[in-house]
Length: 125
Image (cartoon, rainbow, N blue to C red; front, side, top):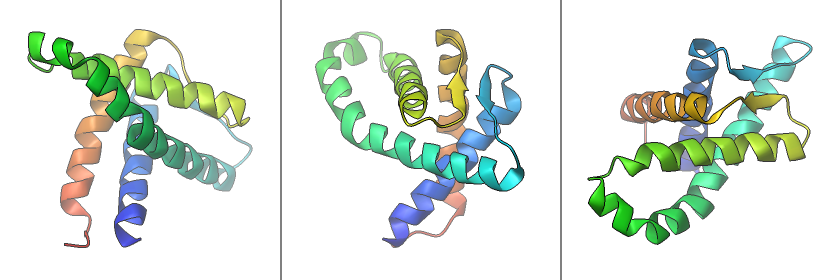
């Protein structure tokens, strides 16, 4: 359970950095508390998408991973971020990613920040 909370906090932090750096990734809300709650729910959605959908996509695109020496990961991460944005719209959350290339850059930022936060934040091990 502790590992789940740490990963969710890391996802929320990484999403916050991407929102801060890229103007086409938006998080809107009435006040700061609402924005934080929305960010945490989006982080949960993002974690769920990465847990359920990403392994299937990676398996189906395995030849492309080999052919591109893993660079297709940028596209897969962008697609997971766009899927999270779509799901946020379905659940009426104020989070939106505008455009594929914004999602590619956002996915790259989220990957780097999430990795750094997972190194810094405590884990079960």
